[in-house]
Image (tube, rainbow, N blue to C red):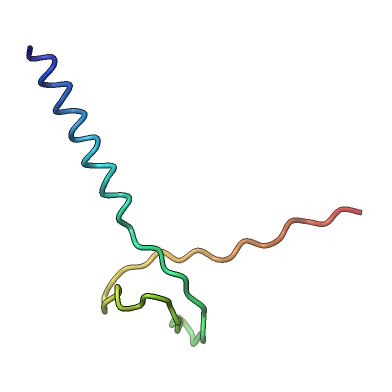
Length: 68
């Protein structure tokens, strides 16, 4: 009986932990300007952001190398 309860608890914690990862917001933005270490962006759904939010921004991937 204890094994079933422990298995259920472990499964519940796993589900709760992975569900939190799915709530990360993804925004599509364009860069308007770069001045030193400051970047100005225009984003769709920018109302989801507030001052002080930390963002992870990735650079666009370059196209593949063309062959001969």
